Image 1 (cartoon, rainbow, N blue to C red):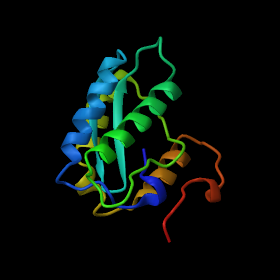
Image 2 (cartoon, rainbow, N blue to C red):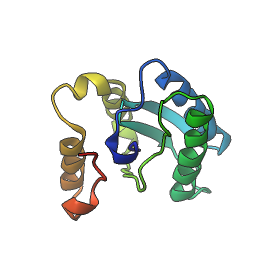
Image 3 (cartoon, helix red, strand yellow):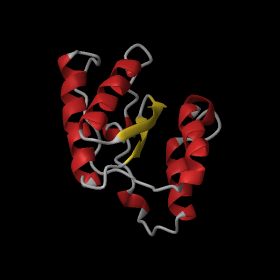
Image 4 (cartoon, rainbow, N blue to C red):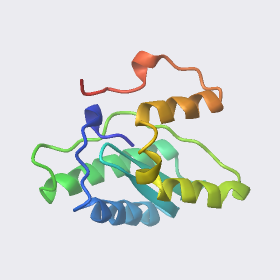
Length: 140
């Protein structure tokens, strides 16, 4: 999930509280949180999905509730919002440790690659057609 206009609003001083809050939401809906981590402008969530829940409903709930959580706690100087849309990718059980490790190393990983390049690489790897103008609402 990306912060609206990719603003670097998630700081190290409160990111852990955000991750715990989102983990609670995920678990309350019957899913299993496998990994959560991110950068100031986005987060990655890796979950074992409860097949009785629609992913779009879960993401909508996470965004809505965590927006309120961040704003209620005054973690940011300006209002906090997630960008509309999201990317979701599935992985086989044999890839669990690889994906968990990847998410856990986000801060190191992004020293060498920006978010946009990373996301485009995912789309290309999975042969997902896209229009560049529709990818992100970037802050210029």
